[in-house]
Image 1 (tube, rainbow, N blue to C red):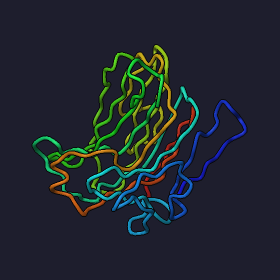
Image 2 (tube, rainbow, N blue to C red):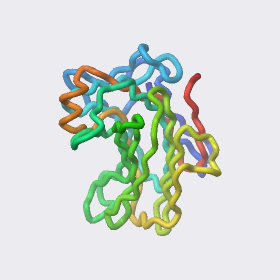
Image 3 (cartoon, rainbow, N blue to C red):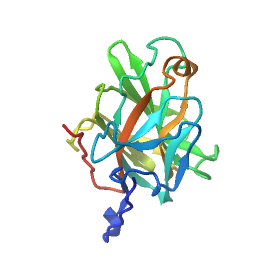
Amino acid sequence: MKNLIKLCVVAFAMVSSSAWAQCNTDAWDHVETGVDPVVANTNNPLSGACSLEVPVTIGKRYVEDQMTTELSFRGSYQIDPNSIDIPISGGGNKIKVHNVQCVGGCSAYGSVDWHQAKLRKEAAGFKLGMWARDASGTRISYSHLLNDGCNTVEYQLIAGNPGTYRVWVNNTDENNPDFEITNADFTGRYTDRVRMGRMGQGVNINANATGESYYLDTFESRRQTFIGNTCSP
């Protein structure tokens, strides 16, 4: 499920690579389970042999990668909404699918989500809303329409002031990100924990989509070099 890779050149070292090639969650540092846990499933492999199936039920379901303090962080993953029944209006209609966190001491607030992604649906289709939280607590936001099928999401976070936040969605051109800000104040920010799966959802989704699932695959993280993953045909 997760293959940890350390390269010899420290400046460009891989933080982690997780391609769900093995159909289990054993290699992750932590798995949050429940009555309906996240499972490695061969029903809908986005890449390789299987993907992470995330049930849309009440309670948290995720896998977690832990690391040391990372000031420069790139992450990439694939997501398939799988036609889940998300209401397009009203409140409580989002699912938190990804978190990049600094667990303690990175701000006056203690543990914070440096980067977060939530899945929702609009009349035009599924959309992924993303944001990065700066040193003042302000969210720098971006959203992108998704395919109702496999999508590849990549992002970059660089701490400091000025700091950097970039996002690519179904886009392998490093020089042309879909969203970019290079003057953010990310003073004190770092990454030491990443979660994939479902960290929370609105009450309207509990009512509409219970019993359904969406899929995640090929999580990979690096310090500096562009990842450039693409979905399988």
